[in-house]
Image 1 (cartoon, rainbow, N blue to C red):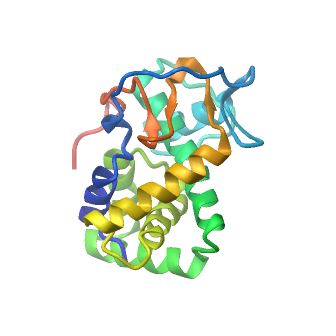
Image 2 (cartoon, one colour):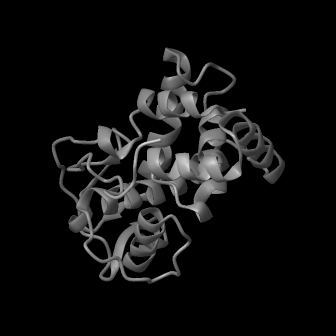
Image 3 (cartoon, one colour):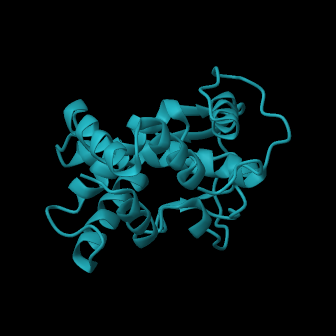
Length: 209
C-alpha cells in the first residue's frame, strides 16, 4: 500500500513532480495543432488540460473542455506533465507485461483513506498537495502502484529501484516520441518530465492542510 508521506518521497526521488523539472529546454517539433501534447498516436487536448485545471482549482470534476479562467502557467504545465506521465507509465508497464488492477488501486486508496481520516480528507489532500482532481484519484494510485512495480521488487526509493524505474520510463518515453505544445514546455525524455516548469501551480485560494 502507498502512504501519502511515501508518495511524495517517491515522486521526489525519481524527479517526476513538475516542480522538479526546471531544466534547460531542449529542441523538438511542436505538438499537433490544437493539442497540448501528442504521446505516440494519442493526443492530449488543450480542453483536457483546461478541464483538469478547473477541477483542481475548484475541487470538482469539470467537464471536458470547461473554461479555465485566469490560467496559471505552473498549474497548466503540471496538468500536462501528469497526463503525459500517465501514458508513459502505462507503456512502461505494458512493455514489461505488468498490470495494476482495480483491486490493488481500491486497496491502496482505502488504506490511505483510513490513515488520513476519510475519503473526503484524502481527496482534498491529494488535490492540494499533488494537484490531483477528484476524478483522477484512481489514476494517481495507478501511477504510484505502477512505479512500484517498475522497480522490479526493489525499494522504489532506493538506488537500484530508482534506476529500474528510470530505465523503464526512459525506454517508454523514447518509444512514444512525445511532442509538447511549446506553450507548456518540452518533454525531456531522459529527465522524465517537462522542462521550463515552475512551482507555483497549486490553487491560490486553497488553505494548506
